[in-house]
Image (cartoon, rainbow, N blue to C red):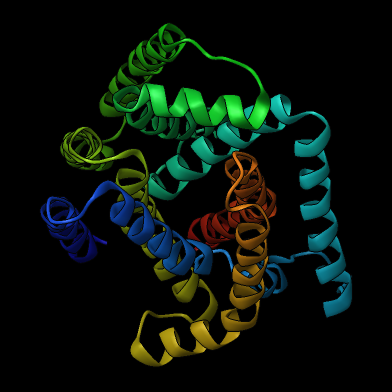
Amino acid sequence: MPKYTNVAIVASFLGLWIDSFFSHDVQIAIGFVLIFSFGIMHGANDLLLIENVNTKKQSFSYFQLLSYYVAMVLMVTLLFYFVAWLALILFLIVSAYHFGEQQWQALEFFSLWIRVAFQFCYGSFVLLLLFAFHNLEVQRVIFEISSHFISTDWMQYLLAFFSIMLIGLGSYLYTKSNQIRGQLLAELFYLIVFTILFKSSSLIWGFALYFVLWHSIPSIIDQIKFLYGAFSKVNVILYLKAALLYWMISLAGIATLYFLFKGEKIFNALFFSFLAAITFPHVLVIIKMFGKKSHTIHLK
């Protein structure tokens, strides 16, 4: 998506420019609006995607698919309630892989382990890069969720580790594929953009710009192409209509949490727990979608 990437770069720096006109509280408010709109929307069509990626002979009814999806959301929610630290670690691991998978789809001709390792290292590096510029705020949020204190040293060690892993795996890919070399150089430039973005903005504003511009919207574009065959105005409308009900349900759930706990420190924990609960099943669906796309490419 080279054309969209150019838009994302311009929009990222425009977001930094807009950032200078608003107070910290206003930035947080706008950041959450972006996350609740495009961010939540990009996972609102999971049931429709499941119907299209199901390659098994047996078919599942809509009620069965909905039941499985809701059951997984409830399981993750319970895990956050009873073992918050474990749920948080799993959430970060799954999110890191999910971000890397979206950014790096052109690895279908490499082995599964190389693909997974590189995508996970890439996503982990991006997340830790964000954390490194806002370590005190990240510490506070982690403590509110899990009641565990994470030192900034650990964040720095992890960032250094994944930097080395990313350089090593990237060098391997560079020597093995001429096709990947161009993307590696482009992604190196994007990482510089992310560094400027994260360093110059607040935690929520920086994450919102990355999550919406570099993850959610590209994911929506990929989903529309997968579901309807092409990205067009008509297909965008079809996608939004299909996602509207589940998007509104998600917003209603978050709004309920906010009005019940907005004056309490527990809101951050509940908010991230809710995001994690809807993220886990979404990631599994997207993995299946990319797997089916890769299978189709090989058949061609």
